Length: 344
Image (cartoon, rainbow, N blue to C red):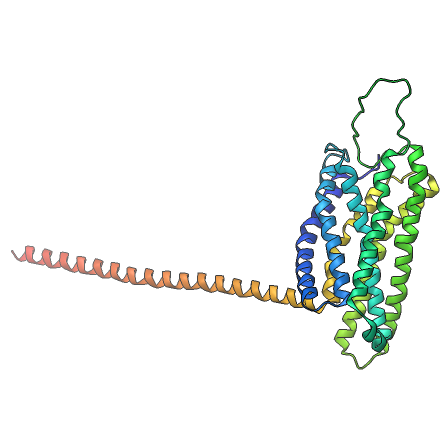
């Protein structure tokens, strides 16, 4: 069984879910609203990337449950391949959409006039459909592997099958003969090629932007930071997990640290919203409106509490004055009575 420290895995999964789910929901709302009003290719691509991240996060609780049980699977076994398929498919889907965004950015800077004339939302829709189908077909191996090498025993009447205690682990030699080459192909086709394309696009994107002095310096630095940040996320989040595919193919077995490498890919869903923020003015506008709304509500709450405190203090002061005046009147009345009794 592959090693994954329960505390580490569970912590990463919980942090990813708590931070990633609300931020991706906010991004989904923004892109969905913008695409319905005036669709652009980059907004369509970012909307699909957000959907992929949300789908990943919706199935992340299954991984949390698995990590809490020391990587043992006690849920219905049908959920194992389904959750694994969604988990791995959305990871590689993200690499495709991040690559498509890099190409869109590069073409917009390198060939601004030609790209503006030829860019159509329908091209982004077609590319998105292709990415989803391509990832679906490649990651369907998750459903196929469990059936490899499962031959019913000859001359046996035993029909009981022991339930699986782990999910998508402890592969047989027959399964590894199929799985390891497929993983290597996933590494080359779904990671290395997209990463090389993204690197080429963003390096040239940065080079071109650095020479365009007529663009506002703040906007230029923000765009360059977005490009460098995306490449860094690409390499750090998806690199270690795909390196495990190469190591597994060379050693003819899954490396023990594969699940830990997968944590980096998991954390990607928290970092994508930062890419959305720097890539889209619509997201920045939504975040700004949200901040203003929160500030206005806080100001109202604070002003209400201060007003109540002032009113309460004023009422208390008036009551104190009345109470003191009553005491003075009572003392004066006692003195008068004492004086009249002494005269008598």
